[in-house]
Image (cartoon, rainbow, N blue to C red; front, side, top):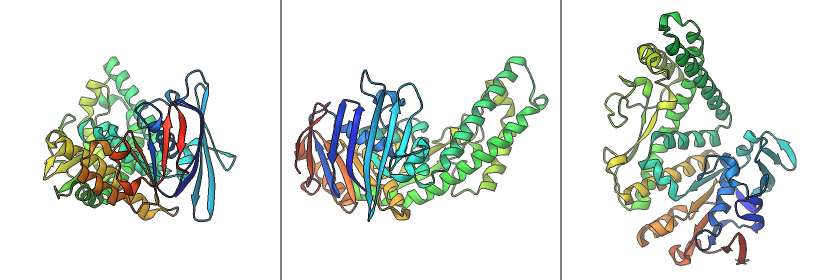
Amino acid sequence: MIVRQLSLTDFRNYENLDVNLHPGANLFVGSNGQGKTNLVEALGYLSTLGSHRVSVDHAMIRQGQDAAIVRARLVHGEREVLAEVQINRSIANRAQVNRSAIKTRELPRYFSSVLFAPEDLALVRAEPSGRRRFLDELLVLRTPRMSGVMADYDRVLRQRNTLLKSARTAGVKGDQLSTLAIWDERLVALGSEIIQARSALVAELTPEVSRAYTAIAGADHAARLTSYLSILAATPDEDAADLSAVRSGVVTVDAAADAFRAALVRLRRAELDRGLTLAGPHRDDLVLELNGLPARGYASHGESWSFALALKLASAAVLRRESSSGDPVLILDDVFAELDESRRGRLADAVGDFEQVLITAAVLDDVPASLATHIVRISAGRIVEDAD
């Protein structure tokens, strides 16, 4: 997959922009705050319908405007696709492919990208929600229908929590709450599918993460991924760092469903006391390990940075292995400034065979020469020099 052209209208600090891109490496260079990251954020949004920087879409619309447009001409072999999304401030977003309207949620099936940015250090150091989101975004890129499964699960979870809160307020006991059983079964059915899909993905990612970590760091620190499943935990507050009871390989849907039902029975009293659903994929975690220890809390800054990069490179490897439309576009946002010279070289070697790599940097000399073949200079939301 190649992005041949990117066009922006009223996106972040860009009033209008058209930029041509090339196969191989494309380097956007400019001082901080000029709009380099805005360019790659736009492409990331086209691929995932989310931003790696903000949680609300309207933050990407240029100040004083009602909508922003991201349009990309995508090429794979002889096939060319024009994909477009309009991000609206007050109404639902809209999407088109080849000038024909489609449902916005269908857009990611036309364009696949993997983006790494400094914010991704949180995958190693921050709370489980970011790691769950990492897995789920990758699942949707591979299997777009999982987006609907996850949306349905979230809806059922909210309704079940509302029922639990009402029961707590009214002092209703669990055995008197017959309607809870209906929501239990729906929660189990949807949640078990998510658990199975995540566990299969973790099994695929683990060897790729190990290889990528070694390639970047130049040392084998036994990087490993482990699924923490809250449905297997003895208590709702069990620490994900305590892996003795919650290690899991690939889980079947049936096994997940049985464990999920048992967990809901086991936790019924606690759920009624708190008014919350205390087990399920919304409380799971992806535990990152180095040399048998959780990276969160034990890994150094350099190790954490390498692990986060390895996760993204492993994602790209999984996507390219099964894609019918070529490699995902690999996006490296302000990465090289954080690496020493040896790791810069190793990273350049690791990404050199991707069909297209987009890189942002404030300093040209931070980027190895092998990745500086096509340079676009950015200043104040404008292209000031295009090497083409």
